[in-house]
Image 1 (cartoon, helix red, strand yellow):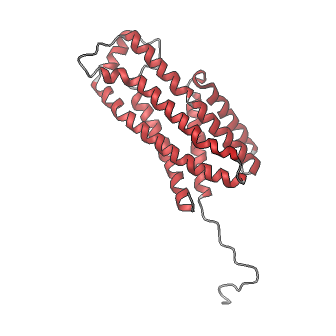
Image 2 (cartoon, helix red, strand yellow; image 1 turned 90 degrees about the vertical axis):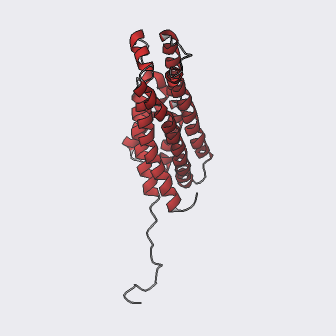
Image 3 (tube, rainbow, N blue to C red; image 1 turned 30 degrees about the vertical axis):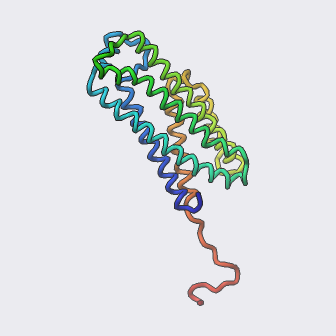
Length: 227
């Protein structure tokens, strides 16, 4: 990936990924079981609601598209970090970290909504306890994927701090985001929100890095007016 144009496209891909990921999670949560204490009647009602099933059917491919765009963004971010660090090998974990997050996210959400898809078939009789266990298992998997986000934030923050392009307060805030991502399931959803906000900041940083450097006339060359 060379040139400011390609880097700019990667930045906008990151911005689009934030929107798609948030939308996909919202759609899939309409049918998923995110609370083990939910009553059996409420679970079965969610599973057999045609509108919720259709929303989940849209949400899963949207989620996959969001993950794909996030990987595109990660490749651009890796290039920026490589320039800042002068070739630090640590930057090579950026894309695999995002891939880890995306893979576990898609797997977890698919488990969570799988029972609703099966409910479309007359051959499937939903059992609330089974749906509850599978749904919570999917949620744990998806939130565990936030560890990959923690690695991404930690590497980016370390390199940006060493390059002197981050203020002290931003460094400490980023490390708080890392701690929340590592906590995963135990963060009560705060890790997902914190990473989303951090990702918006990272997108802004990549877009700023994509700006072409101003052209400085060589010393001793005549000004345009003199020419």
